[in-house]
Amino acid sequence: MPMRDSDLKLVELLRANAREPAASLARKLGVARSTVQERIARLEREGTIRGYTVRLSDAAATRNFRAVVMISADPKQADRVATELRKMPEVRSLSAVSGAYDMLAVAEADTAARMDAVLDRIGKAQGVARTVSSIILSEKFAR
Image 1: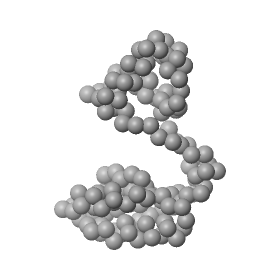
Image 2 (image 1 turned 90 degrees about the vertical axis):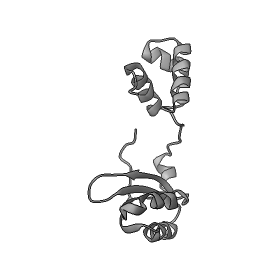
Image 3 (image 1 turned 135 degrees about the horizontal axis):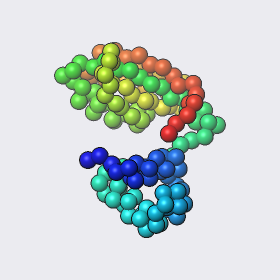
C-alpha cells in the first residue's frame, strides 16, 4: 500500500534524525504532537518502519573496513546464498540487483585481515559463482 504524502514527509524527517522529538516533528509538519505519535505507531505496526539505526561519525567509522561485494550466484541456489550470508554477522545487508550481478552485499570488519577472511567466506559460500569487491574509502553522504 503506497504511503500518504503526510507519512512520506514524516519518514523523511525521521531518516534525517530518528531521535527528533515528536513535538519538533509536529511543528515541522504543522500537526499536533499526538498526531505524529499516532502516525509513527501506525507505521511501525504496519511494518513500514521496521526499526531505527545508529549512524557513526567519520572518526568512529574509520575503525571499521566496509566493502561492497557484487555477487554472481547460481540462480537455483540464490536462496541458499542468502541463507549462508545471513549467518555471517559481518554481512550487514544483502540486496538482489539487476544487471551483470545477482546480489550486492555490504560487509564490515574491524581489521583488514578480518575483511579479507569475510570476503573469502562470501566467495566460498555454496551457490556463489563469482564476486567482485570494493572497499569503501569514505562516505560522501547518507540519508
